[in-house]
Image (cartoon, rainbow, N blue to C red; front, top):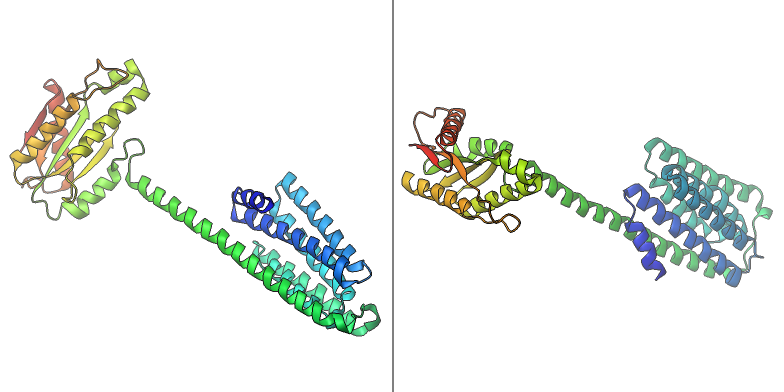
Length: 361
């Protein structure tokens, strides 16, 4: 239950920095607490080592409270590393037997935690502080051996073996934790990239391709080899009046309904695409064996839209008007010319009474 809550708390953090800080802080508190209990119960160091570990637990908890209240994660991480590498590990080095104990192995864990600090310059300073603190402890232990609490020879093997096991478990847990964080971030990043890629090409409302994607698609995929392709540009008749009378929400339903009808007409695998060109304007790229076949499909779409029904407004019938052309028309020396003619045919259909398709072979 406790580990489940911790995991839930960590996954709820927004940034890698926050997840890393809280994960390492909670792990350090847990490790110091275990060290406190282990020291008091088994190693018999007169209680001083246990007291040091207990004080470290309290200091780390204070750091956590400050981080929670202020949100200054970077500063609190720096403080936590200083606590471990200056106020915990060097004193424990003297109290736990110095060079005759496995406490030296734990000093490497402090250096490892410093290297995970996110600011480059401060990271170097933090590592330098940790190295100097430990080196100072080693120098003093050599110069003043009487300051070092001597281990019972029978306890040396236990201290080394327990320190080794602790270090192995700590490294394993730490590395797995980091890998999980980065793997989760990678997956979230991949999902975000896919979404960004999708919406860079798509209209958010209808999920059709957008204008910029279509122009690029037309230029690279269709224009060099135009044979068999036809283009229909159409728009919803009196769309502004529909929105004014029934609201933008219903207007969105109309646009999505028209988009769905157009998508239902699309032949997959033939290079066809449906585009929301602008506001209520759409373009449908059609592949057909002949002009008549392409026009027939365009008329089929027009009739399909006119037959749409809406539950909240069953009395409303939506129609579309547009222009239809063959992409292979020799007068289209450039795609911009083709789109310009398509606009003219679209406007002509509107001026002639709407709910119709004007064409040019």
